[in-house]
Amino acid sequence: MPPIDGAPMRHRGARCATTVTVRTASSKEGDLNNRAYETSPAQCSLWNRKKLRLQPESRRVLLALPERVLGASLASLFELKGFPAQLAADVSSARNIVEQWRPHVLFLDTRIGGSGNYALVRALREADDDATRLIIAMSGFLPEEPIAHLKEAGYDGHCRRPCPVWQMTDLLDEFFACHAVR
Image (cartoon, rainbow, N blue to C red):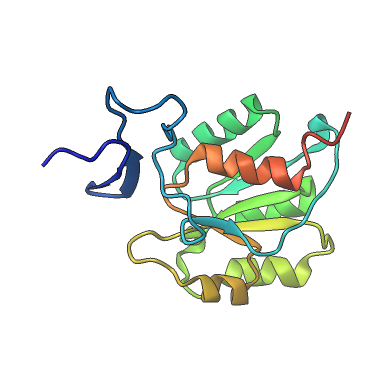
C-alpha cells in the first residue's frame, strides 16, 4: 500500500527506527520534514535547561563514548559547527579530560565503563564544581533506558542512540545561546 501524501512512514532497520515524511508530487512546498528522526521528548530532550554565554572559541564539548571512530567523527563535526570538542573512549580518559580541560558540555554514552548503574555521571556530579556544566546521556535505544533513571542519576538531558548530529548541535546552540553573543 503506497503512503498517504505527506504521512509519516515507520521504517525499522536492524539497529534503529526512524520516521520519514514522504513527499509526493502533490505535496506542498514546505511540507517536507527533511530530518528523518522522531522529534519527541522520548528521543531527545533536556529537562534541566541551562544556558552559558561564551565566545565561540571558549565553548568546550566532551564526547565520552566507546566507539572511537564514531566519536572522532562527531568531534570533527562539532568542530566544524564551531564547538571545540574532544573524545574520551573510556572512564579514566573522561575523568582526566573533565578535570584538566573542564568542558562545558558532556555527551556521555551510558555504556561507557560497562556499568548500568550510571556510576560515572554520579561521580562527575559529586566532584562537579561547575554548576553550569551540562551532562547529556547518549542513552540506549534497544532496550530503552527509562528517562526517570537518567534523571535520578544526574543527567540534564538525553539523546537516544543513534543520536542525530543536528539534534545534538541544536542542544549545544540552545545551551551556549549561540545567537546571543556578538
